[in-house]
Image (cartoon, rainbow, N blue to C red):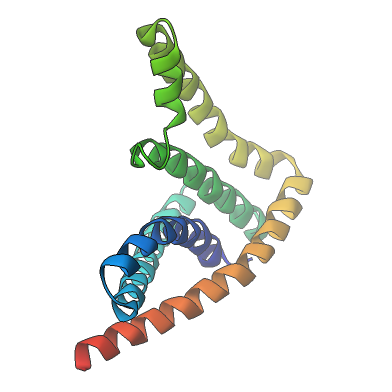
Length: 182
């Protein structure tokens, strides 16, 4: 399993969703070539984000016990990548424009009879859920060989899709170079 490819997937997946939300607006206001340029810049920014994320994960991997096998270390780090990506995406949902998406936290707080009570309950839930989800990849990697196999299988599936994202990144880079030369 390639840890870099696992780091590429969630960032590019989320960038593609955000890009497609904005692409219709860009295509309406400008021409097709500008929309292609916009897409190219989004993909290249996602690639740079993936590199930074991968470096951070590798540094985090230095904290794991050295006596663990390579597969177990990769499974734990891949689990962390996916869990952290889930929480980051969930957090970013709160910043979507109100017309396109009303965040679930805003809905719960606004429609509840006691906004402060619901806000505190959501904060307590998050404060309890984040440490649990941070512990699960390490515990699963340490205790269960099934966990290591499952995460490895998911990582193999993600690797194929991430490879396609990287080909699109290269194409986007070539488009940016072409746009700046011509």
